[in-house]
Image (cartoon, rainbow, N blue to C red; front, side, top):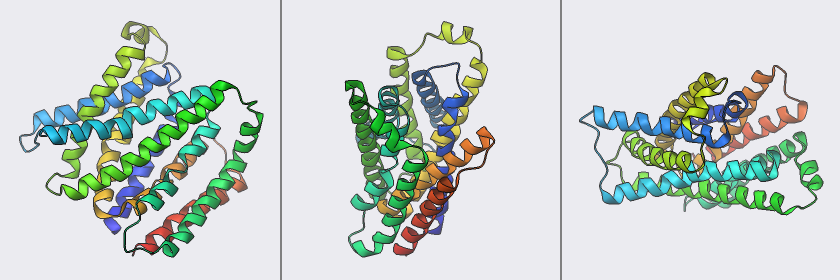
Length: 299
């Protein structure tokens, strides 16, 4: 279990980089950044599969599973999140996505684990989420949204994004446990090829032409961020997450997703050059206590 916990926390640390990448890659749109990130993921995965004889290509059923899960956990999820932020702003969609660990804990609970054992971790996580809502003025944003149609459409996109990733987390864990013959790296590469194909289609349909991108200022930094998040926050993080999913229950893996929020906040504070507020510190502390309580409940 220790191996799985460490892998899950490391994946969260890499996923946290995604929160600051859009703020740094101002030269390209959200769709271009998403497509570039996942194209990097797909290209690396394809090169690894072609370059090593020990890496197998998936069979038909495995390819279908990889394609479906790639939409749920990567291109489909992130596209829905981008649409949500476009319609409803960043605060409320982020808070909706922040409930994923709770749903993962509730839906992925092992049969032998009592509900009472999960209660402390759930309460700590809910408390941290509540404090984060107050600290980020999430309730004020909700109250100020005079209920325009596009706002509630954005809320719907965010709920669908949350459902997509929750389904991915649960189904990916089940698939890995049912196929121990497939290594975490091999499965990651299969997911990467499928995700890269979806990202290419996304860019061709809704992305900016390459000639326009290359003519914009700052495209070099944007390209570097696409590669960094594609290799680190997608390929490596997915390997680590697959290791965690194979060694732990989906409920405990779900709780470890909280580390993504904690690291994302830490990186944002570093980028902005200021300390977090007292409420934000308390929220992070409750998130950490929630992780510790959940690990204890599963041991």
